Length: 271
Ligand SMILES: NC(=O)c1ccc[n+]([C@@H]2O[C@H](COP(=O)([O-])OP(=O)(O)OC[C@H]3O[C@@H](n4cnc5c(N)ncnc54)[C@H](O)[C@@H]3O)[C@@H](O)[C@H]2O)c1
Figure (tube, protein in one colour):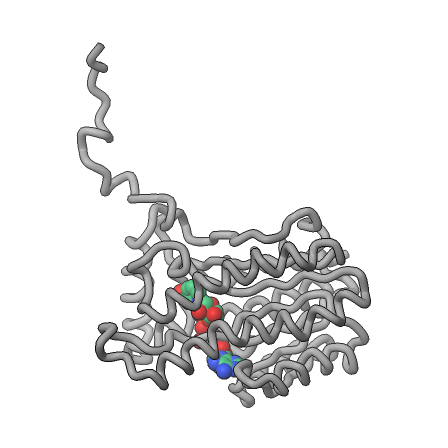
């Protein structure tokens, strides 16, 4: 018995990183999935590997027609939609506020926020008709604490959390749950984009991520996929409006080893 037996999911950004790991895990747990992405070759290859339980749909998540077509594909290919995972993303525009071009601001917000709005908008009627569903959106620790991502990325991710909470309140009475996941530093092509494509460079990123948060290892796509699995499954049917943080303790505080020595060494208490 799989934890998602009989369920159908759309996973945007499913060709790579967190989305790809989630597609693989969902299928292993009995789901059928629509992998939606702009990376056609990569998305089609993942779907082909997963066999009859997966199809690939070319979709640019900034486009209303593409998102609607992706939801429609789930229904035509598999008959229903139990989970909409709004996960596609990029780092977007980076740099000082004075240097950010307006068109880069617009595109970043479109990929990271408008896409989530569209995913919710088009998943909702299908799920309402079914009387059940789980909408999951990938936010970030950057949406919770400042200084952990570029300005516009962080702003869009914070907005994803608030959109999640607001829509969760509306859809709860239809038994549609709406939650976000906030990954911490996770080794995926998104974070490796700025380094040379070599094992040494990837190891250096992993080593840096290992020192980044209290749990001393780099986050992996499967860590986030496991949270998505729980939110998509019937194990979480009383959970809605939440931003589930999967970050090795990053947003909790400083690692123990970085706290001031007087706090870490026991000395007899002054009374
Ligand atoms: N990797 C991290 O450390 C980290 C941390 C926090 C949040 N996130 C978020 O996780 C999500 C997944 O990112 P990832 O780290 O797996 O990176 P990734 O680059 O491996 O995957 C992102 C996928 O989104 C797709 N995509 C980008 N723009 C698209 C568009 N307009 N339409 C359709 N697909 C598009 C890409 O082609 C890619 O396949 C993103 O929303 C990202 O912001 C990542």
